[in-house]
Image (cartoon, rainbow, N blue to C red; front, side, top):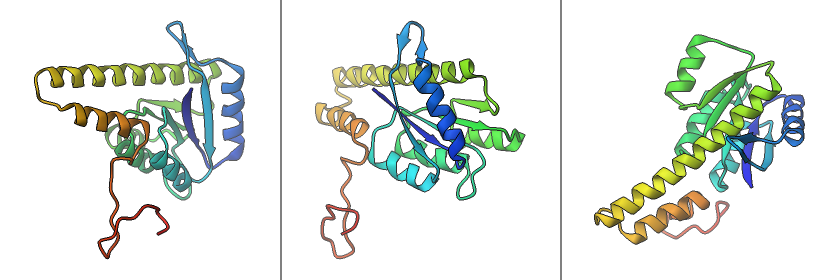
Length: 184
C-alpha cells in the first residue's frame, strides 16, 4: 500500500482530498495504487513523519502560516528523494512556482480549485514515476555490483534506508554516547 502524506493548514481541504481519494481509485496505465492517506495541518509534524517513515508521495499546500510548501518539500527531498513531491495551491505566483521547481524539485503543481479527475490522475502518475525511479535505481545498483563498483553491503544499506529512513544513521550524544532514542 502506498503512503501519501497530505499537508494543508485547512482541515477542510485535507478532508476533501481524503474523501476524493477514498471514493475514486488511484489508477494509471492499467495499474491501481491503493493509498493510505496520512494528513497533517502542521508542516513540522509532517516533516517528523517523513523523517521516521517511508512514504510514497508528499502533497503540500503552498501557503501555510508556519512553513511554506516549498520549504517543507525541500526538506522532504533531502530526507526521501525517491518520494515525488506535489504542490497544491490557489496562489499562482511565478516566483513561488520557480522556487518549487528549482528547490523542492516538485513533480507537479496542482491549482486550487482542482479537477477531481486531474488530481487523482496526477497522483497516480507520480506514483508510477516513483515506481520507475526505484526500479531504475535497483538496475543501476545491479550494474554497479556487476562492475565491482558497489558492494552487496552498500546495496543492502541503500535498500534498508529506503524502507526505513534513518535506520543506517548513528546518532551520538554530546558526551560521545550512542543515542538510541531522540528524547535521550
